[in-house]
Image (cartoon, rainbow, N blue to C red; front, top):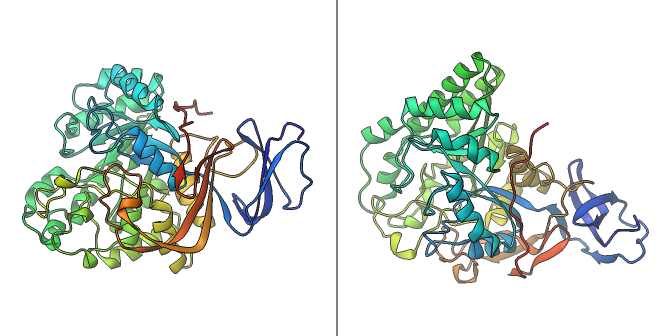
Length: 452
């Protein structure tokens, strides 16, 4: 303990075993002990007493579109990681699309890493992409350290990242399973989307009808069938369903797990906090795919979280310039900007439903870290990185888009009053944001860790 550099004390430290008054000792960027609140101070250590503010593990957001390089007018590593730090996120994983080039080859990955390295306020990992014709690139990307591979089953919205047809999906998953990788999937069925009424005009009800629940269910059922087929051939196929919006798909996933299929699923703050009934016509800042659905569906998603059927909650931060959020749901870019607001948004809804910050930490830190194998992240316990978010859980604020660090201040949360003010954010024992103001960039680039 003589090497301890920092001790953080709080009357409410959220540990894997639950919240308690504790002191957390940090040395060389790692947690070395979680002891009693009034434990003796190590010689030479800096001590900060957080009082009644809650000490949470730093959030791990595994679904962020940084759009850098190539579409930096939409976002960028500097602005995205500043927003992350201000919102209590200490690790993010960048999606392979919306940047140019997309992360579908090792050279493209290195281009992205070179850009990110210069301006990372938080730690950053990377997803690779599985697209038609790049099967031979998947193992090299895996060996280069990507955390897994993303695929679309219908057009992604950008031409440089096309979807996989069913036979191409099978080929990609077989290859990825062969080296023990993870495939993450935007699961909506192209045929059912094509057969639905096309979205045009300002009415949100028309947009919602264009993305039927059945499209999610059909795509997830097909993914499960493929993973089950490869499992029967003794291939360790791991699949993950991105941004689940339809709670009616949860029984499919639960049944697949009981049959031995290795499938996980995430949902997003906007599905847990926003409802179709409250979206004004023309308010395309609420547009995302799959869509925000009705209040009854939201209740069922919360039930799935409570039952452990949903593994994690991540942002799917997908920003764009304001001019792309036109008032026509058919033409507007689909994506919710929420990277800085995920923690207070989820906490505001969770506390109303009787959940605790221990639950929130499990959904937004421990679960995402486990998904991508970052075993040194995601919890306040000895041996983990000293990544923390300090939260005043009972304080409120009203979302002012101009105060956000996102490059474009367009958000569906504008004007909402949320519980949970992030006092400070710490990365490996260093304060990287203080009262919403990020400090100098000290983030690192992360690579896949071999699994035991």
